[in-house]
Amino acid sequence: MFGALRLGRGGVRGVARAALAARPCGAAAGDAPAAAGRALHATPTAAAKVLCVLYPDPTGGYPPPPVRDGIPTITHYPDGSTVPSPAAVDFTPGALLGSVSGELGLRRFLEAGGHSLVVTSDKGPDSAFDAHLPDADFVISQPFFPAYLTAERLAAAPRLRAAITAGIGSDHVDLAAAIDRGVNVCEVSYCNSVSVAEHATMMALSLVRNYLPSHAVAAGGGWNIADCVSRAYDIEGMAVGTVAAGRIGLGILRRLHPFGCALHYTDRHRLPADVEAQYGLTYWASWTDMAAAMDVVTLNCPLHPETEHMVNADTIGAFKRGAYLINTARGKLCDADVIAAALADGRLAGYAGDVWYPQPPPADHPWRTAPWSGMTPHTSGTTLSAQARYAAGVREILECYLASPPKPIRPEYQIVTDGKLAGAGAHAYSV
Ligand code: NDP
Image 1 (cartoon, rainbow, N blue to C red):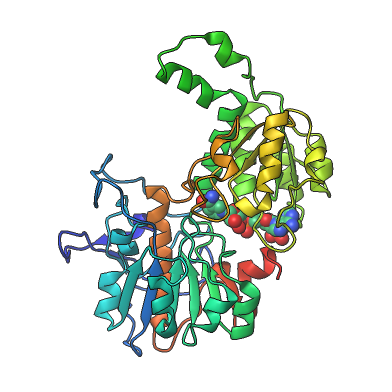
Image 2: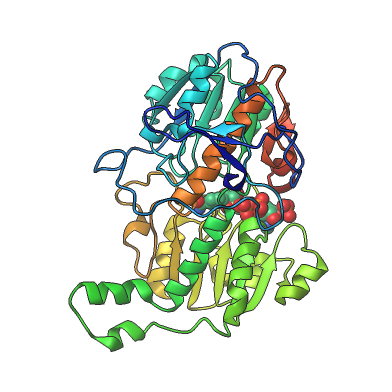
């Protein structure tokens, strides 16, 4: 994305405007940019109302002081496909875009096309989100702070054309209801898969090595090394298994390969033999059989009817005593009380992740205080680096929808299209 920028100077309120090499909407992954000269804005269509739910601004005000001057340039994902390539972006890569005032950098583009943008973080019952739904044409929501698009809310949104996920994972949308109502669902596949793979790898190491409790000892003025190391191990030689070896799951295995772990996976589809051979992967048909042999298990499948509460009172017994469980996929993959009990009784030596249900979770959610937990708010996929990609991806999707005539979006972004699971959704989801 940002490697192909033609930098312009048309900034508004000091915001850098970057025009990217033109590329048709829906072009196959890895396609070269199309010929230069494509209009930066699509021919105006009927005015659309875009309703966007983002997380609140920083407590210290917006914008926060920048910590670094920019982010690395990334043009392609590990599989060779291109990062989002809208006609232009109206933000500075590395800026905070995911909170309300960041507006995903969409306002200038939308208003220049005669469309309107409403951005809110008020998403509960009888919220601003509900008030704006009846005449919304597009809803944008982030998994980090999801606006749950239930069947009731979809029924209250008769004009809705598409629910766009600014990130990956569209389980906050009732996909069956969206299919029934002909509402399209799409997400920015791959935009933050590497971000999450990095985070889950960090969490596996931090749990096994007892990093967070040891840091707490130092921060608290202590120095009892024995307290720190009584739960600390090396990950070298451990068996690590991922439930799902998609972009994130395989990304974690690749990152752990140099650590000398025995690497395992289960998935609905088996990986190519050359990939298995390259990383020495062992395939399991059953995730519970795999868990019984693992020191570390990481969950990386989407939340859908096949996977909801897969870790429950019946399946927790499958884990080795003292296993570590990392879940950066979705909170509802696990029964929250079962995980808390397993940490207390030692079935699990540690649990870490950033996904909960609901989000935000209540103050008394058991994972906030469970022992040996490394939980954070839902942050792994919304680094400033990831935000630049998913904001550009949402812009690319909107450019497709708002073009006259509309253009198809990339298949890898499609979850539900024209009343059925499509593209990435047909591959990885069930309803
Ligand atoms: P991918 O689509 O690349 O991978 C998902 C994988 O899950 C696919 O290989 C799919 O199999 C597999 N799968 C689906 N159902 C099952 C099942 N029942 N058992 C085993 N495997 C299954 O997506 P990503 O890797 O990019 O993302 C995965 C998930 O991670 C997202 O759906 C989202 O919930 C979560 N996520 C979390 C983020 C965060 O910030 N914490 C950010 C981004 C994603 P196949 O395709 O072979 O059928």
